[in-house]
Structure formats: structure tokens, C-alpha cells
Length: 126
Image (cartoon, rainbow, N blue to C red; front, side, top):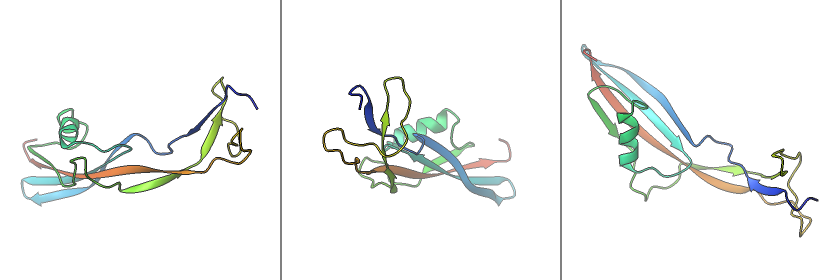
């Protein structure tokens, strides 16, 4: 065992994912879309609105957040993440990471993720 190796739980999910989850015509001149933002960390409503202003989520005249986003929301779920051993050179070693003091494998951790549902609406002029 090399004492310079690092033991860590690498998240398997990207830090931020923005997906268009649906949409279509609302009327002859008006369409709507729905969006999901999935992230490893809770987001404030202001942050989600900034993502819209940057053009990363939603478009058109109207944008809104349907999900709770006030810091009190519960995770949408948890990912079970195994511990890995990474050498000083950055190589991830195969197999379960073994605790050098106990000789036992490190236990997996459950790491949270959060989902936010949003919508945008647009008239035919956009």
C-alpha cells in the first residue's frame, strides 16, 4: 500500500444536467416546453432564473420554476457510490478500495441529487 494514494467516493452523476422533457403547441400562436434540471447540489430560484437568462434553459416570453427551490427541498434521490483508490499519478486502481488501517473495504455512500421542474412559453414571434 502506498500512503500517498487518495481514497474518495467519486460521484457517478454529472454536476448539472438540463433536459427538455416535453412541449408542444398550446394554441395557434403559443407553444410551451417543460424542462428538468438535475444537479448534485440544491439550487436557489435565483440561480435557476440566471440559467434561463443565460439561454441554458427555456426560451420565449415566460419562464417559471414549478419545484420547491428555497433550500428546504428534499433530494430527488440518492446514488450509491463506491469508494475508489486513486494513485498520486491520478490512476484509479481496480477493485474495491481497502481501508489501510482496518484491511476492510470502504463502505459505499449514498450521495443526494436534486431535480427541478421548469416551464417556458413562447409566442410565434420568437
